[in-house]
Image (cartoon, rainbow, N blue to C red; front, top):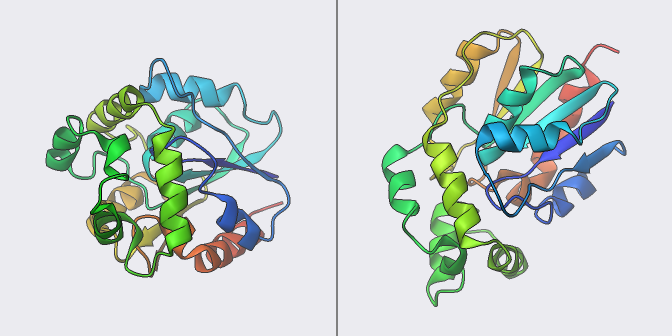
Length: 226
């Protein structure tokens, strides 16, 4: 089965490279989100839907894209499993999200103190200069208006209305400063067949603990029904 990767708030596939290298799964590809226009979860899910394989597949949703995965599950029976990485089913921190909508987020990575800020809230103390530099380049290419629209969509995210028995995996970053650990309880309420695994790392879990995340995801995939 194809493994479809959906990116976080940046909407690109450029932060997945190290994780894909660690994952021993050749049938994987990332879908890049549109960098202009409507950024509501309904619109983004429709965009992603047109690029999904017609055959059976697995969806891996990172952070912001958890809401997209929820929308996809409503209409795609060929999605046979779903993986959430440092993600959420409802707005993780409403107060911070509402403030963030008014900040120049795409430029914060360029501030003189950005290295301290990024390590503290997003990447952790062990993040390399190369990782932070890549993140800065990625964010510099994202339009500020696009980020504001995605934050507005996130602020109104309210989860799935019904339960699902699809096999699901939820990776929780133990050192996540952006998503509270108790958000994993929402996944247990929605998915009856779910495995919740805590891994050491900050919010950018797939990037900073690529090997650990790849190992758990590979084990999950290997146990799926043929």
